[in-house]
Amino acid sequence: MAQQTWSGPLVFNRDTINRMVEPNRIGAYVLLRYDDQSTPWYYVGRSDTDLQRRLLQHFDNGEPYSKFWFRYETCVRDAFFAECYAWHDYKDNGTNLDNTIHPDTPSGSVRIHCPVCNE
Ligand SMILES: [Zn+2]
Image (cartoon, rainbow, N blue to C red):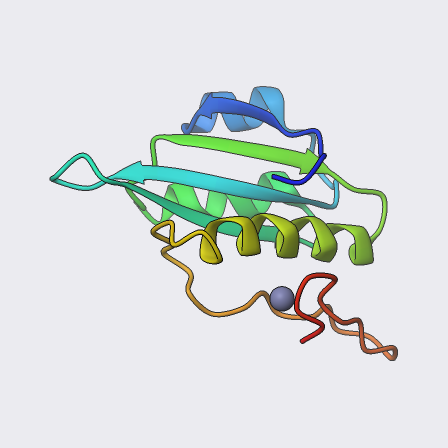
């Protein structure tokens, strides 16, 4: 995952998310699940407002992930970049991704382009 510092893997449950992820922090995350054939699947995402709340949303939706990683960023642009690097690391290596669509650019007046593919 590029030369970035991620926290994890952590157990994906409410207690761990509440204990390990501070509220109101911008950041990126990766979720991991295993299907019936024990094949790993990943989901790469970010939150531009509240990483903890976004992770809890995934959990409350009953999504079958068992582990997660996360990293704080200090601005929306850096969170987008971290998400792009992680997403491309998986996607470009043929790893199973639950979110196959390229990460959304942050909303704002200045269009930010992906640092990997320039999309
Ligand atoms: Zn890209």
